[in-house]
Image (tube, rainbow, N blue to C red):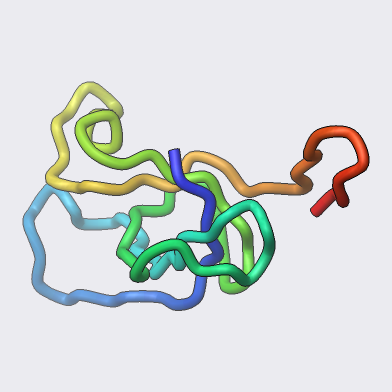
Length: 94
């Protein structure tokens, strides 16, 4: 899984038929320390209602493409909106 922040939306009027009705967001991966980019931003499908500025958990690869008994041609799926991250003793919570 990857932790990231939603930094944008993506709209595509023409796309693979199985993608119709799905919401696409641009996610910037991060290290656990806020605002410390890990790698380039990527597109993820959102089915849980994430929005701009939300910190999210994303699964990538094969697990992202299988849901509702159908294989969907996607590489990244938002699976959670992060409320807080608690690190080890003496570390700041995020």
